[in-house]
Length: 78
Image 1 (cartoon, rainbow, N blue to C red):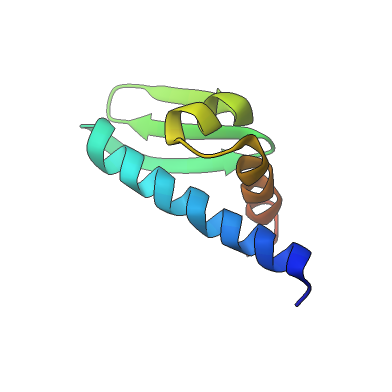
Image 2: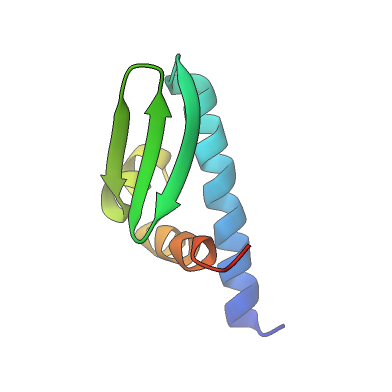
């Protein structure tokens, strides 16, 4: 695997860990999170929050490049 793709996969993992940490510590009635296009969603029992990748990078404490790599990975077929 080329260094470019290794970096993207690494960034994807960093962002997923940041998301899991964020929802575990900041969201009390957390139900699930999702990513679509360049938007990040957090659903709770009472509301849905939507962030673009720049806002998500700020609240998660990751770089914008890491968020872009995350969204590239999130768009791959599962």
